[in-house]
Length: 108
Image (cartoon, rainbow, N blue to C red; front, side):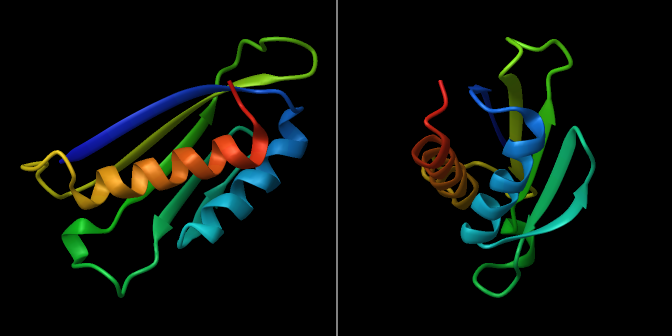
């Protein structure tokens, strides 16, 4: 199973950032399958790669706020593919999602 994680600080209140994160994931070819006030799960839309390569993304809020204006997020991006190569499909999707989050929110 390929699995990549990414932690970042969001300089926005959680209630403003989660809708933005959902839009970022939709732009990266994900459908949102679960969404609560502190957890979001998306699944890559089928059709471009085999079923075992379909990627799932989970975003979870760290319960300890970094400030009154921001939160810390943890993202896990994974699939059932064995990561036999450094540049596998899951890694490519991870890099795309990470870059989209950084460009859209200017996170640290």
